[in-house]
Length: 336
Image (cartoon, rainbow, N blue to C red; front, side, top):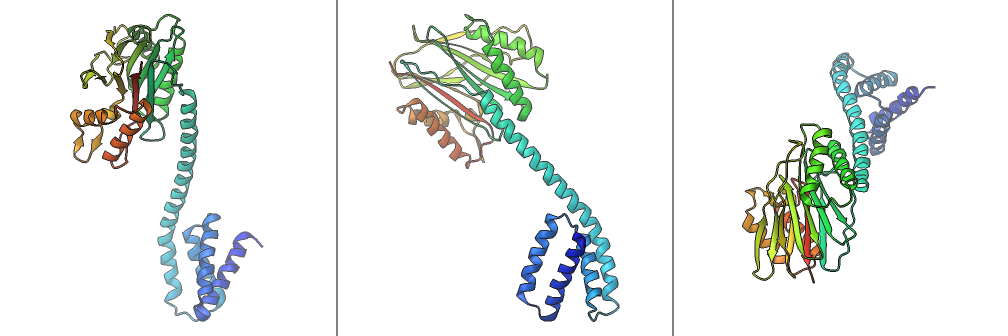
């Protein structure tokens, strides 16, 4: 006896039991039968046919009008069954894609992972939270033999696996740059040529690159169309933007980038971020710059990592815990 013959006999038993005395046990068994049918991909129209055959086998008293009605029901359910099987197929594909994206997200974290440098004069914190599984933001720390700390923060305007592959290329391009080329403007010019030659023209990359010289406590920085950072003056308690204009990476391979510098005193704080921070959106629109600065000042007395964590929580709350864009924030705080 084949599987469908067994199912037929089981269904006939359940149906006969229920016709006889409408017992709850038969209803419970019908629910189990339904789950078993789904498990073995028995279509809705097959269930209708099974029901009709079982009624005939049970030889119940039925009017002549009832049996032909099952033919109409069967025709109706055939289209439903086709849609059902298509839905099941799409669910399977969706699950496979979800699994692949999870693997890719884990690989992204492994490939793009970076260590926060341990520097006597600096307290450094960082937080990066993707709006979806795959992040379009990227940050990277480099510490040279002289103790200088370099930090890159980039935003790939494009999401998913292509953006992750693009970020991997940028990371390994930075790692392969010649020794001694640590000036932010030089770094951006080198990366710009790499991106222009290797990245699809439909993808855009912004980057802010800064180098903190631990010998003279000067922060050198350049930008390729990236969101400006903030600089907190401990002495005056004022916050200013770190403006640095520059062309996005990959637009023009001959692009040059201007380098800026900022003297950093004890207690001063550098905040670098992606536009997921500055363009935090609520139901009423983007938050004002003054509102963001208010939140920054509220937590500046804390350690760098705590500042990053607290700001994230504040802005996450403003968005009803639904990030609309990738969120990346880096804090450099001079402590001695």
